Structure formats: C-alpha cells, structure tokens
Image (tube, rainbow, N blue to C red; front, side):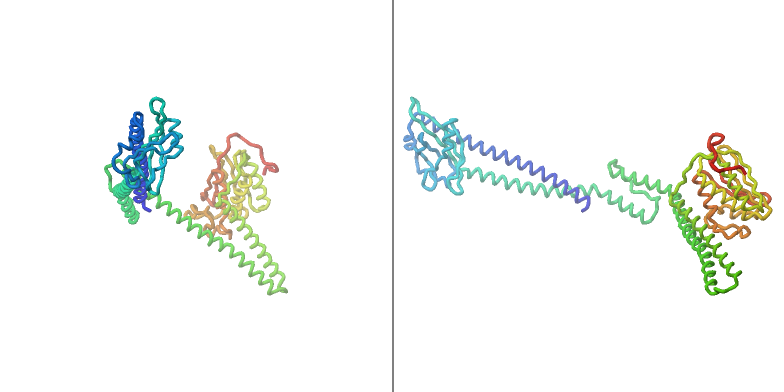
Length: 487
C-alpha cells in the first residue's frame, strides 16, 4: 500500500467518522424534535377537550361530532376519547378494526397521580399510537374522568425514515468526494518526492556525486528534504577520496590475510614434509646405519620444535587479531633486561652480550616485555658471528623508555626496512636463518599494546639496531621483580 493510498484512506476515514457523528446527532435531534412536537400538539388537543368537558358532559361531544369515526389504520389525524373514572369509554372518534383503541392502565394510573401522562401503544400490526392522557374533574365536585388525545406515529416514522435515507446517501457521497479529494491532494503533495526519488536513483546509477537534486523554493518538508539530501551529497563528494582510501586499505587487508594464510600453510608444510620423509626413511630402514637413523631423529626433533614455535607464534598473533589486550602493571624494566641478558649469555658463550641499563619504571606486562627482549636478542644472536658483540641498552629519553638491541650482522637492505615487522617477511638471504618471520611482528604488537613503537635501522659500520620505545612511568624506580639479579 503506497503512502498516497494510506493518506487518502486515513483522511476518508476521518471524514467518515465526522459525518457519522454529525448524522447521528442530527437524527437524534430530529427524532427528539418530532416527538416533542407531536406531544405538544396532543397535549394542546387534550387540554381543549378537558376545557370542553368542564362545562358539558361527554354526550355533547358525541352530538357535536360530524361524520364517521376515524380509521386509525390509515388516518394520521388526531382523535379524542373520554373515559370514565374506572376507564370505560364514554366517547371516541377513532376506531381500529371496528373497536375503540384501549388505553394502557399504567397510563391512567400515571395520569391520576400526576395529572397527565404520555404513552405509546401498538394496538394492531403496523399501527403505533402516541397518546396523551389527562385526568380531569368537573366543577361542583361532579365526577370527572380522563380525556385522551392520540395520533398515529406513521407520519413521524416516515419522516424519520426519509431523514435516515438522506443522511446515508449524503454520508456516502461525502465519503467518496473526500476520498477522491484526499487522493488528488496526496498525489499532488507527494509528486515532488517522486521526482526526488527518480533523481536520487539516477545519481545512484551514475555514481556521480557532483549532481544535485532539483531545487525547490518552498520551505516545506520536501524543500528541507531536498536541501538535506544535497548537503549529504556534498559531504559524500568531499569524502569520496577518503572512501576510496578505505576501500584500498580494505583490499590491502584482504590481500594481507590471503598472503598470511598462504605463508602459514607454506611454513607448516616444510617441517611436516621433513618429518614425514624421515619417518618413511626410518620405516624403510629399520636396520639401517645408526648414524643415519640418529640424524633422521634429530631432524624430526628439530622440525617438531620449529613447528611448535611457529604454532605458538601464530596463536599469539591470532589472539592479537581477536582483540586480546595485555594487562599492564607498574614494574622496573632494568631487572627484566638483566635477567634476559644473563640467560642469553649463558646460552651463547661464544658471543658477548653487553648490557647498559638504568632503573626505568614503566607500566608494562613483564612476560610480554621479556618476550620482546628475547625476540630482539635471539634475532641478534642468529645474525652475529661467533666472537661478535651484541649491545643491549635500556635508557630514558624524555617520557619514553628506549630499549635497543644492536648486532654485528650483515644488515638489512634499505628497501626491506619498512616491511621487516610484517608477518612472514624475510629479509635479505644473507640474514635468513630459516625462521618463519613472525617474531618481529609479535614484537610490534607487544609495543603497540604498551602504547609504544618499534623500529629498525642499519648501523654505520655493520649490523642492525632494533629499538622499542615505550611510555615511561613518572618516578625514579619501582620495586623490582622477585628472582632478578644483576648481570
């Protein structure tokens, strides 16, 4: 159902209710007026009869009557009756079916009590009489009786039926006229909206945001809608470049996701293939050379450990993508750095790991900072030759805590530096160690969770320095972690 039809039906319904209420009120007033007029005429006729009876007996009424009695089945004239105190008929100039119409006893009782009474009776089929009954007494204490004036209600009922028909026809004509008028008015009022809809469809089909809707001079709702739509088009046109950038970023994100899935599949396929081949070798040569069997088992163990690290890194990144956030507490970063450097020095005695750290309070997650340090130091260990030096520095720079790890490796090509912290990105083959390329991506996520950043730059001589800058806490120091010791 269109808005035009709904408006027309609603308006027609309102008109119908108004006409119905008006018709009912008019009919009620007409019925009341007709009844009151008839009652007034009957009471006047009854009082005339009473006045006559005050000076003459009822027999004189019969003598004064001329012509036959009225046939109440067809006549609409007023008839009169005179009744004795006990209700017997003394005089009547009206008959119905050859008999005098009877007056109800309750009307006589009411007239005796109040002096007069009205009553409606139906003495025959299709005949309804309206009666006025008045009690009277004759002068000198003579016995009186009841004077009755009556008239058929046929004329009144016929007039009311005609009025009902007229009201029904008038209501129907008014309803149809109101429906047609409201339809035309709604069509004319909504026609500008149709034009606006067509113009909007044309703009949407051509994607031309520079077009505008036809201007309207009026300040009605349609005019305001047109102005609002034009302002929206202007804002969309102004933001079209940003929308294109958003679509481009979304496309890049989808492409990165596809690349991430492909790289993860590739990284997992390599250790699985190695494990499967070595298992097949062990099954085919159960009595083979012990050295070959030991080498196969070593390969299986190494690839299993590599796959375990890869899965753990993928799980960490998946939690990061799902919106997982680290819980930060006030800690001192210096003891963490000393613990990590001490353990790394114990594991790599062929390299020198030098730490320069000062007490540095920060709001951080101890486990995550430890993992970030291990990622940087493990990366430096892989690319620093034996006898080389790895420098770890922890210092405050303004309101930032700077954690830097420098190695003496071959460095990173300038073109790869902006991408080194992306997932599954491997640097120059000279720095490739067979890793999955997820560690630095995890380090970037950890720094971002702390409100900081990570970066990498080549050293003037040789090697690379990886730096993490985190917000430092106010104050000089906080309680160190249990179990930490100086390097």
